[in-house]
Length: 296
Image (tube, rainbow, N blue to C red):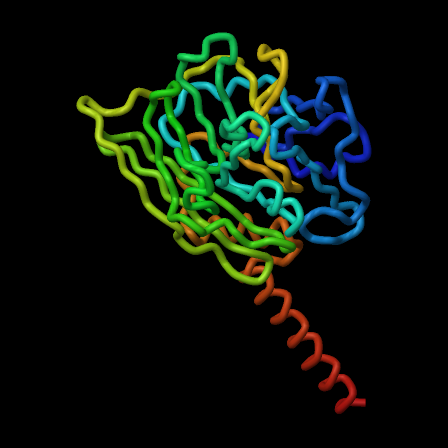
């Protein structure tokens, strides 16, 4: 598992709190190490000690990244989740899932804002896992959707419902689960917020004769918020938003209840069962205090 909650800021290193261990490096546009943590309390919970990651770019798609090398072994299913915060001004530059024409060149600006990428960079045709703003093939085509790509540039793609990830000036919880254990591989997309539990935002299924092979990449680059500089010589396709609590669960398809637990953990709210236990303890304490006063 990979979990980067960026709470080891300030600094240029992001510790993986998941079982895979290791770290990611925060890098500036030119590839040099840079402290890209938010101010203290700038993470999704807003509490002291909670930092986020300023994965800012621009419409030309250059920008920063957080990348490292990881080996997750062999797996056939997974869950990607996390949070992002995009201001209205950042969305005006480049909204999630949006593409724009460059007025100087007449060509498309690189859209496809990367949330998560795990792939062998030296061989572009190799199998990879990428979660990014879908973009579409025409300008401003259905902004606000995410795409999960499995395989090379012509690999299988799974897309959420359009106009799902469009909120600005607030924290958005996103998640996608992938089950490739059968001939009909299915991806489910979810969206939530600090005040609302995640809901299903689209289901996409691709059939492949003979089933889908298990992933076994070995130790390869993982990047958040952009393509990796590692083995790539430069990054593009930046997110242009603040990220927090990015997770990659290997071999695990989380259901809605588990995703809501992940959401609540990030914002500092106890799980429902824990909250009920705490409430019960307070009630019992109050009853005991009233009895002691009545017995006095």
